Amino acid sequence: MQQSNRPRSLLSRLTETVMVGVVRGVFAFSRALGPERSGAIGSALARTFGPLLKAHKTALANIRAAYPHKSEAEVKALAMAAWDNLGRTGGEYPHLGNLFDFDPDSTVPGRTEVDGIEHFLALRDDGKPGIVFSAHLANWELPAICAARFGLDTTAVFRAPNDPAIARVIHEIRSETMGNLEAARQGAAFAMQGALEKNGHLGMLIDQHFTRGVLVDFMGRKALVNPILGKFARNFDCPVHGVRVIRLPNHRFRLQLTPPLDLPRDPDGLINVQGAMQAMTAVVEEWVREYPEQWLWMHRRWRVPAKVETDVQGKVSSP
Image 1 (cartoon, rainbow, N blue to C red):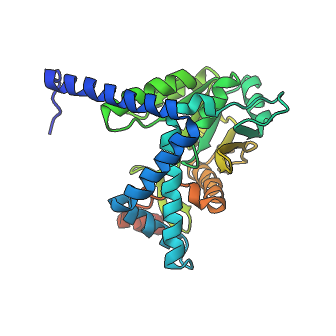
Image 2 (tube, helix red, strand yellow):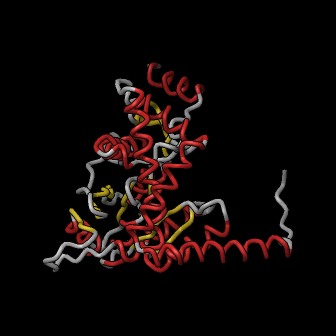
């Protein structure tokens, strides 16, 4: 069915305006509470209501498949820990600007520490384009703030929330704390390419299902991943780094940026797109295996149609 181009109704616009006000009010209340209490409330809400959602069944099924030797009690405990992390991340959102307080010259540790700041600075100063991939681990918004604070010209690619009111308020917060932003939408690839052509950098989460993606192995199962970072790595032959966030005790965080990956190449010396995405996915798997309670298990990550697997197996087995 063709989508209508008619302007939204007055009722629709009024409803969104009211909802924006409500969301801003909730965020203002969260700011007044401070990040620790706000995160704790988010955790309590997620642990209470998360198990009632359909996504909880998805999380349990994903954990069972990834850890077949875990007992049912361990599976449920891991799912609850993942809800705890997701709730805390939501509660911390109004405080993003304050959560990242890393100062390499300070002798007093802050809320956030950075392991591999030299790689951030090298990316900033090498005069070349660069790519940074990440995953939904701990509070995954912090790397974009780190890049902005240290002057790394980065375009963060994000998926806007479905609710327009929440999307507006979240965009306001992101705009205040991060660098360039690009919504994942039709035509976004041109903006992403433009950033690299200007020797800028791209930051993108790669751990969610992409229907038109390339096939990779992830946590012992086949999954589809967006190939766009592999394509850009091939076209620009630029450094590719991974960055993750680790949630530490006492409401602290650690950011870790990897050295540039040595990506596989084809006989012509060009980066192999599928191989590049598999290499990036392997790094993400290592991260998830190390801190499984901090990953977003509720997402339907493994949705590979049988025909896709059959086609790929056929190509591999054919002479």
